[in-house]
Image (spheres, rainbow, N blue to C red):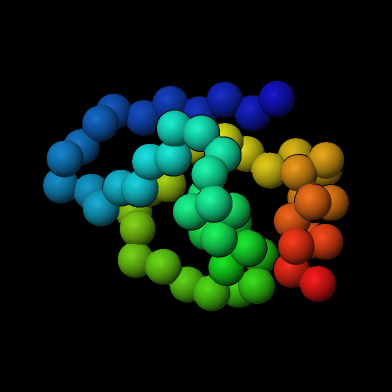
Length: 60
């Protein structure tokens, strides 16, 4: 398990996902495909191996 902490800084361009949603899935797929984004910090659920298998199937 990885746990990260940071001091909230409102000047950062942050994206927060509170749960696994279609928007979250689209973001993960885009990142896995190498698409860049302009966020300084992205917070939310991590795609573990089980989720990655689902994402990989979704991409195909």
